[in-house]
Image (cartoon, rainbow, N blue to C red; front, side, top):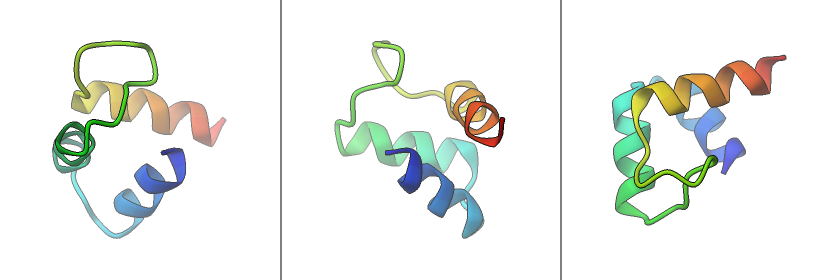
Length: 50
């Protein structure tokens, strides 16, 4: 899932578009939330960069 987010972001997808795609594909959230949100994607990207 992280690879997907990184790949989509590198291709220019917005945080909202990535979140919408993950929600549409019923991908479970990283923290067990109800749905993906742009802020969740941003936090995931920050953790991946660290």
